Length: 168
Length: 170
Image 1 (cartoon, chains in turn cyan, yellow):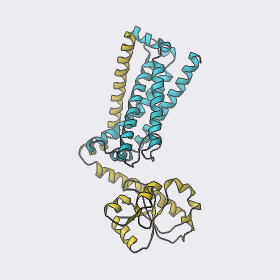
Image 2 (image 1 turned 90 degrees about the vertical axis):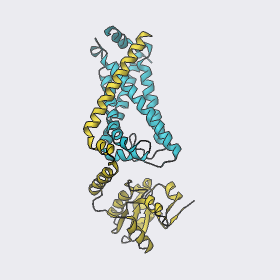
Image 3 (image 1 turned 180 degrees about the vertical axis):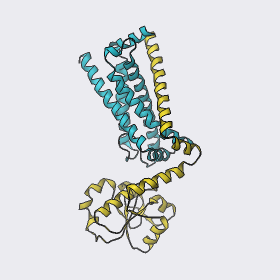
Image 4 (image 1 turned 45 degrees about the horizontal axis):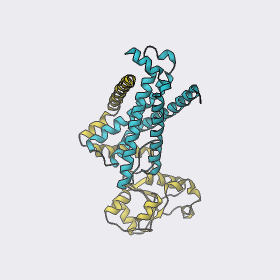
């Protein structure tokens, strides 16, 4: 597949992934108390920190999703000179998404191993229990984010990074 | 090699910046939740907010506490309806209850339950106080024509913790 086709595919995948994170985050932001109940049910955090996590996690999802979408929209050359803001936004948003997906998978695996039958309060479907479906969804997100991050750093796509070096 | 190091450092710095922005926005929008949690009042706040939400979302659905539910069960006045998943019901449920799991609610109009007299008293429960499934099913049953539907909001956890009669289907 040609470089431009792959770039188009990765842009579309990035926008979809970013959109999913924005959607998930907005859902949690609009129902903060239900989300706090879901976080509390995991019994992994001291109660004092549950509110902080419930309040901020939704916004971490929104900010990383919006940044990834914005990074794709600013891919054009005119936004990359003298500083490749699009490339840095995409990569930093993908780092955040990778971190969140890893955290979600770990938390879900721990919860499944503990045998807790609770609402996962995660992803696209709030009314879903912790189980293999939720874990597979997060592993898929992790794989997609990992592929996009790898694409960002592939040798052939380093033009923007070279501009970044020149801007140092 | 040098390029990779520079881009990696720059990306990480931006990621931390984005994280800080998200935390600030979260604190700005949900400060009462964070404050209640830090002060140890989270459970009270969540109970209050759940109650407020249910009053709007499930307006008109009558609710029962544990003592009232147990009294009705002892008098054998009502049919208990378990709104939890089939595997949870099979593990343990209120003695004499029937299971109507969420995945079957779309087929509710053609279910066995609908063949009963619409004046039959029904007590619907789910797993615990925080779950909404009992209220959701009670609302659907009311809409389907049952005139005496009650939601036992304490759920099976409260029933089981009180040591009231339970059965297993295994």
